[in-house]
Length: 168
Ligand SMILES: CC(C)(COP(=O)(O)OP(=O)(O)OC[C@H]1O[C@@H](n2cnc3c(N)ncnc32)[C@H](O)[C@@H]1OP(=O)(O)O)[C@@H](O)C(=O)NCCC(=O)NCCS
Image 1 (cartoon, rainbow, N blue to C red):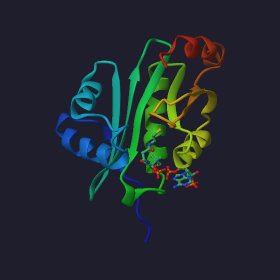
Image 2 (cartoon, rainbow, N blue to C red):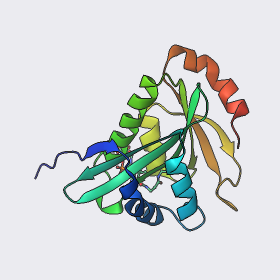
Image 3 (cartoon, protein in one colour):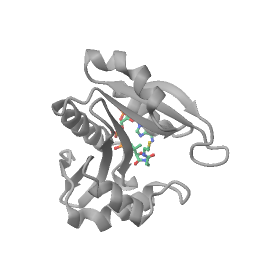
């Protein structure tokens, strides 16, 4: 049966507990945000958070932080296991990109585990490009790729500079 894509909306404070639970299901202990970290990121004035919701409740969220006028850092993208592979992750990223473009942000940067093929494919489909390997970024033996997507012609020129200055 056809089921419409969930609605993507802004994060609200009352979503916090559900988002924390979703993050704990989506990531292993060594990567998952603590309550304190997640709360701080969600409430940071430079943060953009969007949640995907349908009649069942919240099914996923994306969280990014504007680092400066030129670029944003995507901190997490989570979709509950039972709702995966239905384009919810893609819809969340597209909603985020729309907001970044409205704000004139020229590039988005993220890190993804080298073995996380689902997320890598999703980002590749959304025009993220590989921009380096971060050795043991997620702990021993767990390297990550840094990926970058640019939004405006000027973003392309800025990408190398952004990467150079971006904290590993
Ligand atoms: C990665 C994640 C967000 C994807 O969410 P999703 O809603 O299932 O993704 P989408 O349905 O939008 O998938 C988009 C594309 O990504 C790729 N993809 C998604 N899941 C995949 C899987 N299990 N295996 C291979 N490719 C996959 C496909 O190319 C897919 O396109 P297609 O449906 O046309 O084949 C989800 O699996 C998740 O929450 N994982 C755990 C947390 C995580 O790893 N987050 C990313 C951190 S960097």
